[in-house]
Every structure is written in structure tokens, then in C-alpha cells.
Length: 398
Image 1 (cartoon, rainbow, N blue to C red):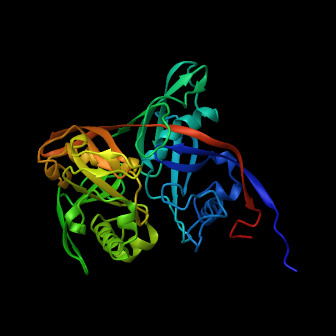
Image 2 (cartoon, helix red, strand yellow):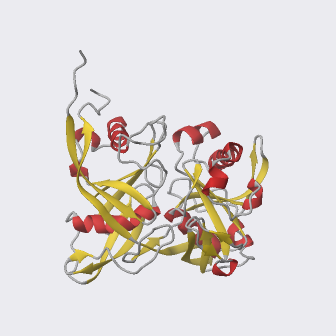
Image 3 (cartoon, rainbow, N blue to C red):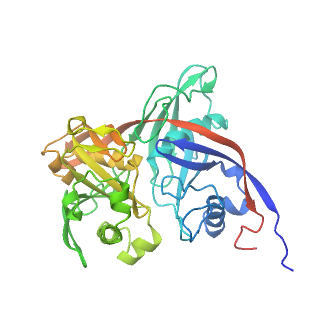
């Protein structure tokens, strides 16, 4: 007879941040073996979310069977004097046993400040706005969150509407400081190849024009026509086309090699599915959003779509929005070219769920561009606070 494993409860909070959801922990919440990077921590996060699941549903875990809802976050006191908390993000693959810690989740960033306040990691005023200084440990960047407070509690309800989220909530303003990579960052400089636009040779596809940029997360921008698309597509059109998805992944994987983030395209696909992200852009065109709402070409400056973990995202990743803002503000990028050329400090772009306004402060010195900050608004809300249960034999050492 097989010995039955009991279950253990682990303190956790389930939160929505922007258009994503994830399971939040502090380091002290985790079992000793999972407080350090490595196989044990990955095994726990996989079990919490219900991966790997060959059915693709994550029924036996907290994951929601999409890249937007199969996420984990660890937030603890910061090791840096200029920040309040350290924020570590993990993108959990659904069908394979992979937790990708290589990049940030800009959407869940909006929930980090509220979580830190709720768990007593930072102090906040009774009323007004709490300023939470966040160190994003994945990409080694500082983010400032402005969290509204009321009667000593995080204000979660409000009238701020975010396309891709059904109900309005309180607005949380985010400042992504120095979002472009530097020479010490992963992949090197903001433009790791030194070019605003590269020509990437993709076996089986051909030569592809792309902007390869480190901003928010490493991101690859191509024109929608490169994929045979108009730029106004929704998930059903893209995610049911296996040939298109394979083409997109081939471009992403080979561009990852060009950015110096993987030795081979196969390694990029197998080991780091979360980043870089592949996005495609097009000139404004009207369409019907996934909610059924009409989006007019007059409502936007360009159309933008992004792939996440191998599928088209239902809205726009937060870091993708940062990358769009940065690329729009720098003349010579593919995004700037689609916008008509030049510099665009603030734009509104259309995505599958609606539109979003973003901005970036860019400056050029000695023919080198730098970006001091990118700005974006999101909202966040607690969904559950308590314990998440996993079988006691979750550890690979058992």
C-alpha cells in the first residue's frame, strides 16, 4: 500500500495586479528549503500553481491556465537602503516543469505595494498616498508605486477603469525608473546590438526587421506584416494558428540569441519562455475588443499586441507597455517608425482588450539615448488571504 502524504499550509495572498493574477508570499512564509533559488523553490511554485499539467488547465492548483494567471511573487524587506521591499517574480509554465525568473511582471508590480502594506513590510499614512520604493530583483531596477490610502487601509475600490479588467478600482501610479538596461544589466545596454533596428536571420522564416530593446523586460518589436497580420487581431485568431505561433516563437528565439540572452534558439525556447517578449505593432486601425467594445482608430496612436509564454496576451503586459513607451520616445526604432518617425513622449496604443496610455522621459547625449522613467497606471485588489495547501512531499528531495 502506498503511503499517503499529508498536506501543509503555506501563508499566501492571492492578488490581482493590473490584468494579471498571482500568488504572493513573503520569504518568511515559505518552507526553509524554498527560501533560496533552486530546484526546491521551483518545485514548490509548480505545485502551488498546478504545473506541469498535460491537460493545460491547472485544475489541481492556483494557476488559471493562462500566462496572465500562472504567476508567483515573493516580496520581502529590501536589502538596499534606497528601497523598501525586494520583489521577485516567477512566470510558471503551464504544461512543462519550468519557472522562469528572468523578467518582471509589470502588471503584478501594481500589487506589490498594497501587498507590502498589508503584510506590514512598510509603513503607510492613514490617508493620502503611500510611496513604496520597490527593488525589482529579476531585472535589477527600481520602481516607485503610489498607493492610495483611506482610514489606514489600502484603498482598493474606486472609479479607475482599466481595459482588460471588468470592474473599476483605485488607481495606482507606477514609475519605472531608468527602465532601459545599462552595461551591467542582463543583455547589456538598452539596445544590446547597438542598433535601433536589426535584421535577424530566422531559419525557415527569412530575414526579419526588429527592434531589440531592454526596457521593462527584454522585448522584440516587429511589424505586424512580418507575421502576416494587420495588428488588430484578438486571441482566437492567433492562438488557434499553430503555424503562426511556431513562426512567432522562431523569431523570438533567434532574436533572443541576437540579444545575447541565450546561446541557441533551442535554449531560448526551453529555458526562458518568459523573456524576451515578442510584440508586433501596426498603424491605427479600428476593431472590436474582446469585451465586444468598439475601439476606433481615433482612440489610439498605434496598434500593439504581445506574446506571453507562447500565446497572444489578452491585453498588454505591463513591461510590454513600458517597452512600447520607451521605444516610442526614441527616434529610429521600429515603434517610432510606425508612429511616423520622431520622438513621442506620450502615446495611447490599442491592445486586444482596449487602449492604454503610457509615457516615457527620454534624452539624448553624445548620440546615446537614455530614459529616466516610464509612467503607467494600474490597479490592484486582494482576492484571497490565508493559506495555500500543497502535499507535504512537494520537495524533490523527498
